[in-house]
Image (cartoon, rainbow, N blue to C red; front, side, top):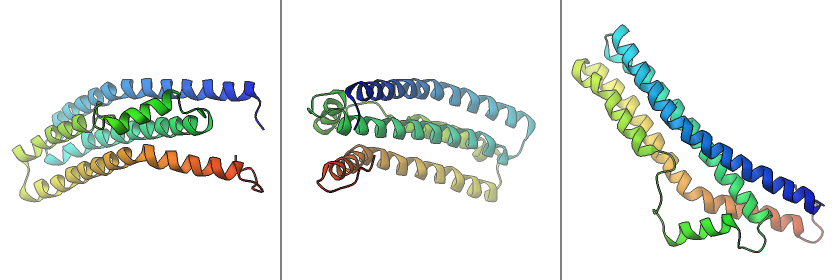
Length: 184
């Protein structure tokens, strides 16, 4: 069984992790868009075919996946804290979850998907200006695959908070059930 000191240390460490990963996510986004712009300009200057848009597209994909992973992990840590540390239902995580339930869509886009979709559209523009029909079709499909991926991630992010909350509650109930072995 954890001591109160250990529980407080864990809580403090996990809150610090949330803060740090949130900060990294905010710094990552301008970095990704700066890198994307630099790579797009560099590839356009060196490679004059429409396929040059693939490299900057990969930068956008990698940046989005990194932002999504940071967001997902921060949310998961928050649900863990909510279930295992905020037993009185009055801590930060409980309040933010209730706020989200009562006022859905009231915050900014946590995945920056609108910005990424705009960048994808801009990234595709050189293809339309100088690509062959085959290049346009192939590159349009690749750009749309990324847009579809972002939509799937947005749907998963919307459902994650409730899903993780229920999963952690199930784990918590299993830990405290009479005759059960400790899972964590």
